[in-house]
Length: 399
Image 1: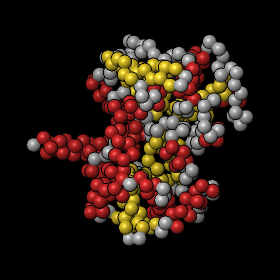
Image 2: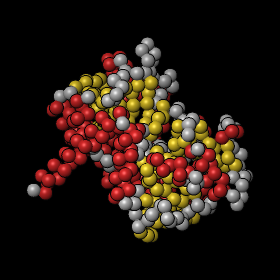
Image 3: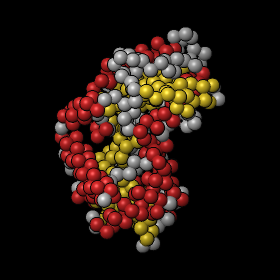
């Protein structure tokens, strides 16, 4: 009985989520965001967690409050470390209290973003979308050596593809590709969409299955935009039985390669969205998709909330954390990047991403900024005023 009830609840939730995400958000984004923000206020604030992390530069504390636990764990690992210990958990009202920690990170309604910015908080989107523009007669693939190598590997492995809406093929995709891959990649933090949710998406799109020697080895669900029929989005993908060894054989690259080909040549689309990624410039998935020519865009489907981030104390541990976590913020001119210079592997080129309106480099008083950085987007911190300068930067980027 419990299992049956759970399936019914999951089915109802999938239907409601699909209706909101696919039909309502593209047409009435402000209304949906307002309703969800009001719902959050009725449910009350999320609890505050005080975490203590320790790294090579010493220990630091993070105060965090998130409604979605999986999202919260992502930001907690980023700004407190994987081995951080929860020291305290208590009710918290953002409007009446300050968290009193080295760094704060809270999930709040998006319409409150500018108010938080006035208090020195950066506003990070929950997710960002990466979109590849398509044009008839123009090669959609960048002429980079990396992508050309990937394409040669796809051809050498003998991959092909088929496009279907067959229910049996979808069941195989969901049970043997999508779900196992999500669990293999993300473990307990995996966000696995319900079967009915993706089935509804299939009605407005197609399942692209990558084949090798007659065997289906990977798949990706592509769904047309509810308002713009020339815009297709990748909703879900996976490798056969969640076998991550297929990554080394470029099966995941084949999903992207064939999806772009299909969208341009078979359907005539002008844009293909390669799903969403985390708002960090060092994110591996973000950098990988950037190589395929994808541009960053705000993700409207997740735009009802943002993560506000503030530095309260400047210590060697806080500096090391910011250096290793270059992030993306939502501002007056769209998306902007913020990177603390000094611990960024790969140099400035790895931080640039198409679609960013600006990239601000933060350096300390005794550091030289990278030579290719624009002087207009370099903030040099002065001793004793680091916190005030960072909070002023957060305000300036938002207004």
